[in-house]
Length: 67
Image (tube, rainbow, N blue to C red; front, side, top):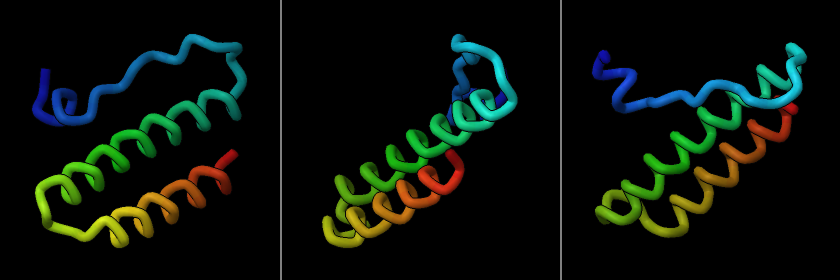
C-alpha cells in the first residue's frame, strides 16, 4: 500500500455500471476527501469557518457540474 492509497482511499463502485455513474462516483469520492481536508484545516484553526464554508460551497458547485 502506497502513501497515496493510505491518504486517499478509494472504495470500489457498487452501483449500476455506466461510464457516467462511474465518473460521478469518482468525483464524489474526491469531493468527500477534499471536504475532509477543509474541515481539518478549519478545526486546526488554519482557516476561518467562513473560509471553510466558502471552499466547501465551491467544491459542491464543482461536484454539481460533474453530474
